[in-house]
Image (tube, rainbow, N blue to C red; front, side, top):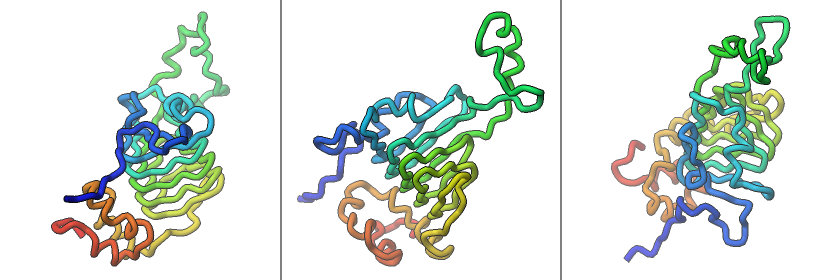
Length: 218
């Protein structure tokens, strides 16, 4: 009998005695937010308010898509396209939103340019207070430094930091990145991941390839 039991991806608070940690997949309710299994958010105040406190100006239709096994530090925020203001006239102030006769000019706020969906890959680590701007795509295995303001796309296994965030280095060379993407351990069955946690966390690329399930793309 297999005694290896994976963690439950549908438990809201996965760490006993630590209500500050929530798994996001069982938490989110918005059809505009998609989160993969095991991705979590850590906040000592109210992590269950993630959708309203950490996903801002989300009026649609653009989506926020977060992959599996992502770790979001306290204060990680996603700015969505609803934050846009007009910039082609003398003032950027959104008069129609405040009502009164100003609301008659709401057409001035429609059709503002958007940058599309915000997409986060699998196995991404966000440091404390990271901010992601609309339409950014963050690759698999990336690390977003604390306090970073991510204004442009981040490559797979890239490490970025600063405001605006800039690429500091990549965690692996191009050849190894390609091998890691081919292995795609985050898509393995949960039981197989459980069996190879130590390899996933501390092994080499070759170790990970050797541990891949038979018949995988690697």
